[in-house]
Length: 170
Image (cartoon, rainbow, N blue to C red):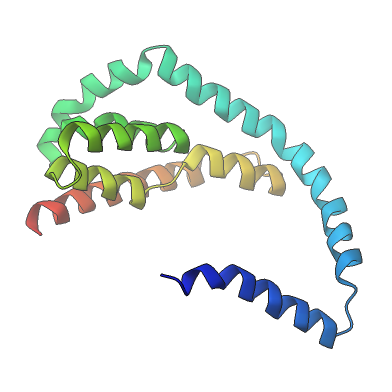
């Protein structure tokens, strides 16, 4: 584990030596990159703000709890523990919210339980689809997002389904 702590400093050292060999002005190149990043940040910010507000609204409105209780029987039928239904629904919207929920599941059921293992697989095999879509598509300027988001959500759900199945048999 001690060697892993050296990876980042080693990368910086290699880049610095590479810049010296190629006679690249490191500071000037860095500041030019920052200048180009500022317009990107300004164009992405409205999308990020909207996604953060929508994910908070989804949770606080009670829609998340209602949808979780409604889908719990279907999840149970598919082999997904109903206790992680809220995590399955929250993960595409909020990374920090799903991290807190994962910690809560670990504390409630124990880290070695079947439910906790399924929750960990669900957390690790899925992504915050709406956040990533907001960041990526804001940079590309693409407006029709239905198909890519649908594919991402379906693949997230299939990864949860397969992960819970593997947790059950392993």
